[in-house]
Image (tube, rainbow, N blue to C red; front, side):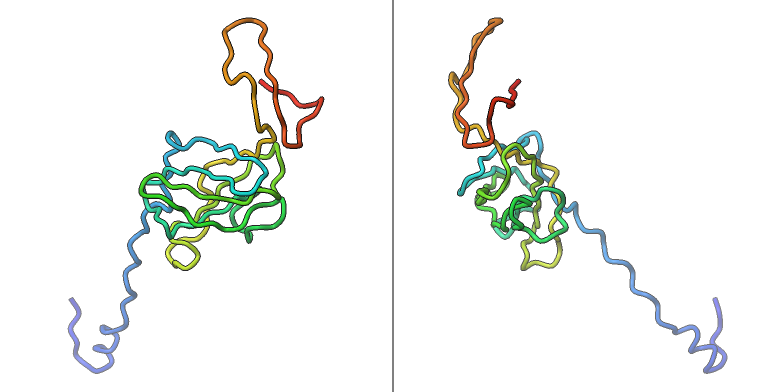
Amino acid sequence: QVACTSLASCASLSAAVPAPPPPPLPPVLFLDRHLAPSKSILARQYQQVKVACPFPCSTATEAYIALTDCAGPPGLSSNGTDVSSLTGVTPNFFVEFDARDLMAGQHYLLCVDADGVAGSQYNFVDSGLKVYVSAVVALEPTQLNSSSSSSLSLTCDGGCGTVSAGY
């Protein structure tokens, strides 16, 4: 302990003490990848993606699809979609996108802001979930028997051709 014997020594003892750091935020996002594997949508309007998010998602949560990262502004032609709000109840949410400007055959990132753009605690981050834009709109038959030769018929919404491959 230091004794306060003069005005100068007392002033040095009462110097401002920095505030303790704020407690760490909870994990930015918890998305159950076992319940919500990679998604597949078409390059059409009204495409819905199901998201299993027990914490911290709510109907205030917003999302968009981006080609390369979640740092830039959403909705730049084939680079992504506009922002949409989640609908549903914990932990099962849905988000609907206009994917007409996305490129078939590409994998995109699902970018999520847990408290929405109006909130201040979170920003848009890569959820870790991928969204695949498929050109295939129909498949016949829908199941195959286990044999060495089976045929499938694909109906494509553009993007398929003689160089397309399936496995």
